[in-house]
Length: 323
Image (cartoon, rainbow, N blue to C red):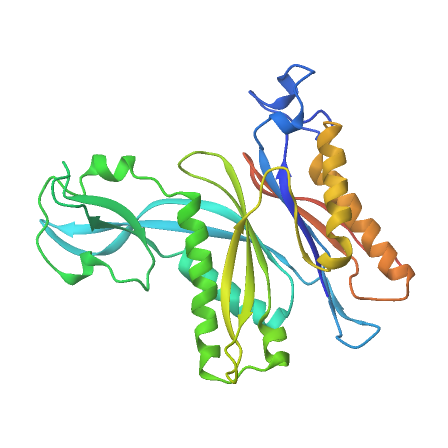
């Protein structure tokens, strides 16, 4: 089992750092609920446990939170003909975490990493009558790309100014992750998936990023959903949900801990305290509770990672006590 808690950070005097324009400089009567988030956090346990009851720890120290870099490439032309993508336009960091089968999660992560590292600037045709014939868009490496279909492009398209002003968005990144999961699931459609097979593939993800276009922090949850028609095998789809700044996303043992994790987050927001520290404290309390009940479903080390103006930082780790 796994317990992952993800949410938004707000500036506060307990965070231990601040920068120009931070909430530390805000008036005292301005609350976290009225501030824009200044980061993303994800806290998780790091154990691999058995599926028997009661669960037992197989391995500890397994990473469930990953830093992934998304890279956007711009097209390279020789005179007026497209050649390939060889110039990096921009890049950004994301925090990604999962719950569920570690083996399946690695397959999903490989797909996510491959797609995010190969984002391409392309275009779509605008409706007739628009002032500009094309609009620039982000295409995934496995999507049909009109640039790769050949043709001659006017000198007023894909100009240095156009490329300088074009920006990747958080919606582009979220779409790429959703597509990556759907792509990874395609092979499962070849087989008759039963309930046990679905449970192995049911690995939810959460991903946080700072939108390169708006500079706002966004957090998305991705769930594998089952569907079936009468008499037919199960098949799967990917559901994507954006997490509101006043909510947390809980993966893994969510049925047991989601309301309590939200309560810890709400209390920190109301008190203008550190939301990420409050949720990390809650994660440790949850691990202790499970351990004291004689279960090893979740276990130490507990890890907290954040994404803010400084980039990705491992904020805290609570390791098991030495025996």
